[in-house]
Length: 177
Image (tube, rainbow, N blue to C red):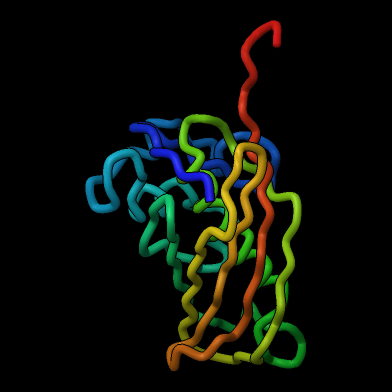
């Protein structure tokens, strides 16, 4: 794995939209936090950045945010079910993409932005109720791409779904290059 320090100012970009910051938040709204270490926004800063967006619709809350691991949680509710009364697979895909995107963006820091180019999700156990936890960890972090694994577990620590997201690092090139 390529490992380099994260800068003092990190902008988190929603990788599912190849546009700008997730909710139009300025870089100042994603302030650094001593709870995670210099240069990494804390969970509170990330949660504030995503207010009102897709993660709010899912009920996803980031509880730990750092360049090597991101942890989130959410509570299952009927709005997240498919017609058979179990969690819709798209919920897992969306959570996995969100977790990997935040993790990749925090690691890349002010060197650029990340966008998702592939999301592969396996659904392993049906869930109807309860609280779920997602944890993103890196499998590869390189100059042009990153690969993150996300595991979703229930309150009994059973594996519910797992996913892998490949992110493209979008970095600016020097003028005239």
